Length: 76
Image (cartoon, rainbow, N blue to C red; front, side, top):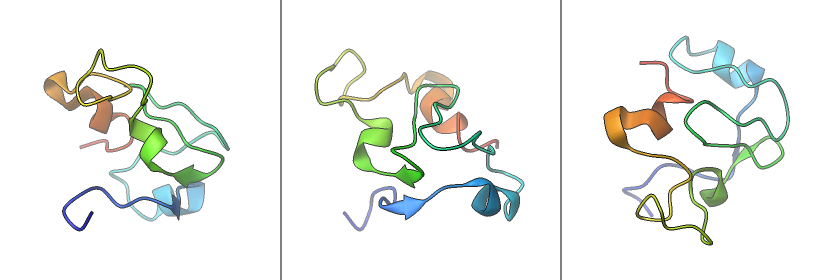
């Protein structure tokens, strides 16, 4: 997974506030605009992927049109 998004890290207000390009989550299990979600306070594979729904290939929780899924967390 060296060329993929990092997973299994804490994404909280402290992390987001260190980078003005990141959205600040409201707390554990936050769902961002675009569909990405925190698993507790962690970014995990399931934050962006839903293995039970392939309406947004490849099993994404939201669309990648205009980078909508990414733009929920990344404000740039």
